[in-house]
Length: 434
Image (cartoon, rainbow, N blue to C red; front, side):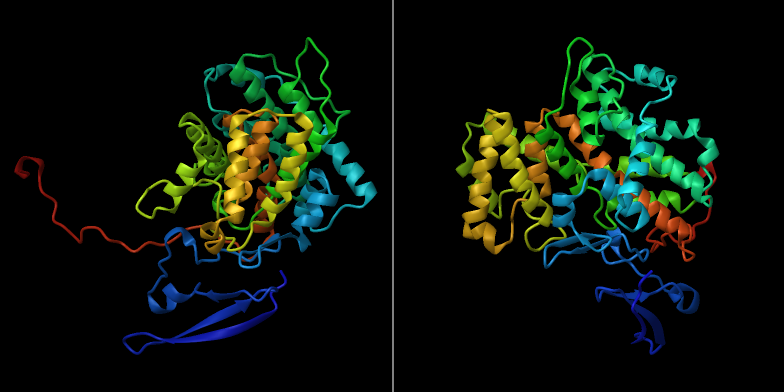
């Protein structure tokens, strides 16, 4: 950890009790108040719904500055990583703390390629799901089931076991995702091609068929690579916190990541880009009247909200959205996509970037707005959007799990509560209850 300084905060409670709390200042100046001894020494706990103002750990993985609109992985600006790196390089960076040298990258990519196949016994599990099963349900179930094939790597205190687990998850998750998709449309599973790069191999397994050759478009592969990079980590969000919480019991990495996937599945988290496309579809079915929906969004008495605009953390432009805006234009031009939903999205974007109502409130298009557009343009069905998010977020989940395991301050997660139920009551025999 790179904590720069320690301090002290003195508080006087209503009854005159003097409370002394330690403070920690991080490398970017953020200050945390250590309340770890508050309950033991003063019989008090903090109350923070959603833990929105509570730091559960110190982390050196990613830094988010919502006011400035900045995101960095291990100190590197997301703009530089998206432009110059590949997804495997970023995964290596998040897991190891440094960008790989050419030889390190070659070794890492070779290790990942050698484990892209699933055990054949897992195919029976895919067959057991109903045809309409949501791919996220299959993804999380398959990830948890994968742990049963690698019980020799469950020890979180063994560095070699952890590394082998991270390699297998990186290698096999695209295969699981592609199998889940093929299952949902009744097509045969496509085995991985290890002569292709990471994202091209995933596209091949998704859209290839045994009866015809399929070569992924390099522009499409590059756009997907950038999307995965931009989703790779984002601090202590809901799914990352879920991975840490599950892992704090020393559950193995596969089980912990599966827990994060289930958290990501929620519409308030990983489902946001799907909600963007659903909104665009609603506007399309209502006659493509963009002005009508913009007016509804401005009406404070109307429950309608434009999905994909503004961000809970970023009070400026989402830096990831700036990057995706350029990729969106390149992809749409390259593919020559003729999609009425994408036309509606372009009109909404134009309004958000020029209308004073949106500019004053900083309701800029966010990453979910552009990722939804690009995923749709690339041919991914709506139900696969959150799966793609999970593949991108995987390195961040694993890095946080690993960091938590290695941190000597880690304790099993056990949030407190303020009890608001009945006080002590006498038991009433069944025949006397009325």
